[in-house]
Structure formats: C-alpha cells, structure tokens
Length: 48
Image (cartoon, rainbow, N blue to C red; front, side, top):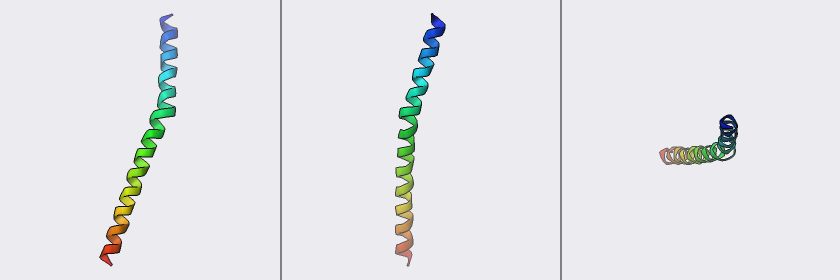
C-alpha cells in the first residue's frame, strides 16, 4: 500500500507540474521578454 501511495502521489505531482507550473513559468518569462524588447526598442528610437 505505501508503494501505491508513492506512485500515485508522484504521478499527481508530475501532472500538476506539467499542466500548471510549466505553462505558468513560460507565460511569465514570455511577458518579461516582451517588456524588455519594448524597452530596448524604445531606447533605440530615443537615441535616433
């Protein structure tokens, strides 16, 4: 029985990480990347 609990728990955790954590981190980093690009583009325009 303890082995089954461990296996099911591991499957639940890995599923949550795959379906929730990874997309959330991707979304956060993509937003930061877009903001940095906007700042970089703005600074290039202001130099000219």
